[in-house]
Length: 103
Picture 1 (cartoon, rainbow, N blue to C red):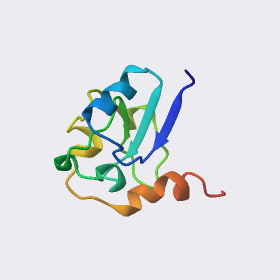
Picture 2: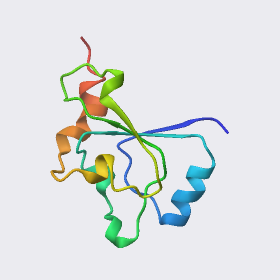
Picture 3: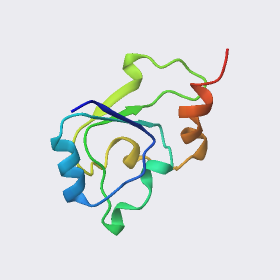
Picture 4: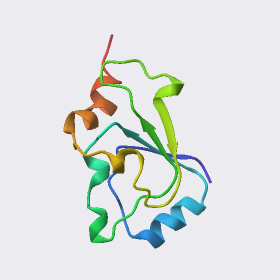
């Protein structure tokens, strides 16, 4: 299967779906700091993320280095983006606005 890349993806389904997607071994799920979108819909409603998550912790106007990327393992993990307390829409804009703007 070809690799699949997602950026700031919301939770798509329950734990069974997240486990199935994880077991395909071809997902690269990228999140940024405390992006609000990957926190939706809430896990308390039964939604879950597949694994792994590549959590980027650098700010919006900072060049990303390898030390800014943490790999979070585990279906429905509460670490990484899910573990942040201050949801931020600007962190979601980073994928298409900040990293895609012309220099």
